[in-house]
View (cartoon, rainbow over the protein chains, first blue to last red):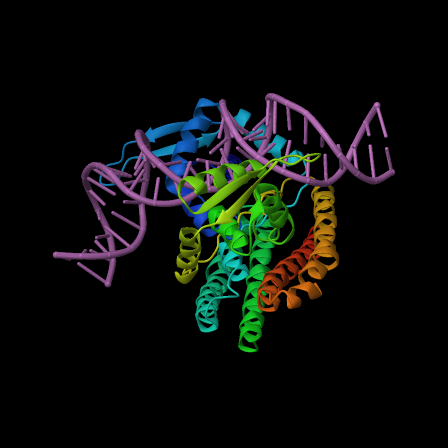
Length: 182
Length: 182
DNA sequence: TATAACATGTAAGCTGTTACATGATTAC
DNA sequence: GTAATCATGTAACAGCTTACATGTTATA
């Protein structure tokens, strides 16, 4: 998976591992993330597989950087992956729901406290999407760079992130009420 | 994680690996799943750690079974895990959203077709929750067995599953319209 | 003077998936 | 007969996390 995300970003232009990590932390954080260790390791592997090439740039007054370029093989691999339609649903894994599932015999107030913490986290996440990520995508520069269509698809995934957070917040409130009513 | 789910189920009563797999496939499938290979392996490990004990039952006319029992150590480990509140959000990973994110240069009809396939999958999932899982939780037997409170928490997690599927379906329709409008 | 941002890597370990492997009974 | 259900395991591999490891420059 991470392989195709890296190819997807590199398909827009050459980038360092550090840049890719930043893209993952902003643009895709609502549906995929990776640690820098995984990204750097994967890029090395991808170079061996001929999906990317790299160039080491020695900088003065700044840390050296290794820039990665997608190859034709890499472009083909990305196109091939996208052309094979997905016929299964993405599976959900949510540790917090595991905790709620087994929380019937916990002190109700403790469970409510935990729900309140989660509510704050999800509220922050939603605000982050609306105040930081959305303006980033709606950037006028994208239109000038011929990335208007791309931005529409990026925005689509963000909309799912927003719907997800809204659903989560609604559910947390409902669940707090349920516990209070016990 | 899977360790605590297994402990959580075994805390309600002794069970085989097969039973646990079935519980994961019904009650927790909307927020956690595991393959049987992982379950059997983990149970063996947990026995070494003294969290569970097992008894091998040789059956006539039926396959032999290994029944697992939670130990006091196991009960403590579960209680301890539940008592430490979660202070981070569960991270989302959704391959389908990755595909949409990078789909701007694909043939629009191909993307719509893929969205339609996903819509059918999510519709089925939602129906499954409402027609199969919900009745299972609302079973009158739970009240008789003193599991009414437990069932309320199980139901809470299912409600999140339902909200998630509803949000996903709404998003799919919105996204299809967005692509048609391009 | 301390923290954040820039920048890249390795290694150990844990988690999870896929495939291999077996075999009985029941329902269609 | 053939598929589904019951039932349990191992092994190889892939994917991911956490910790270790280093060093500069800009900013507060």
